[in-house]
Length: 170
Image 1 (cartoon, rainbow, N blue to C red):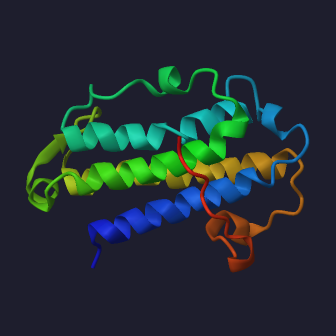
Image 2: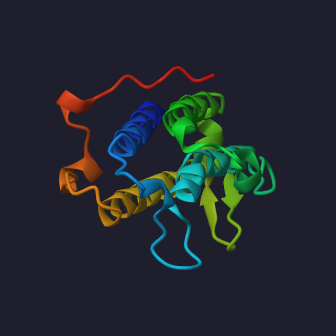
Image 3: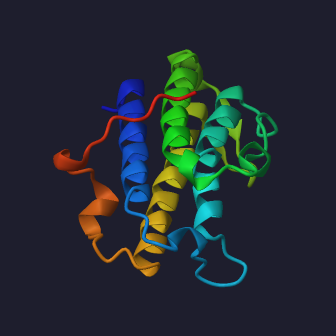
């Protein structure tokens, strides 16, 4: 059975994987761009550090217009802030989700921008999927940029020997 705390724990694990992947950035990896028109690694880090949280805010408010645009919120963010921002996001998501009554998550609908109507609790899986999907993209960017030490398990789990305490969010 999935609970709010289980959701939060999984969000934290995904965030920790992102932080650990960032720590394996190869030289020159921040500038990597798979092709014209795609984000480079710094732009991807900026999105990953706020976009999923922004989705949670919108869903919990029941209003897709709430929150700050991700590009605005992360404009100019140096890549070195990524671990701290991921730790902040993880704590902010936990705080936001815990502030909403379970009855709201189970009973109230949220209309997504593409017209799909979901219960708010169910809709929360969409920004979780963003977090997971863009974590995978970060892994692939790093591999393509030359991080040859990475293997499949680096994308899906944090080995106990590599678990780092998340930095204190400002």
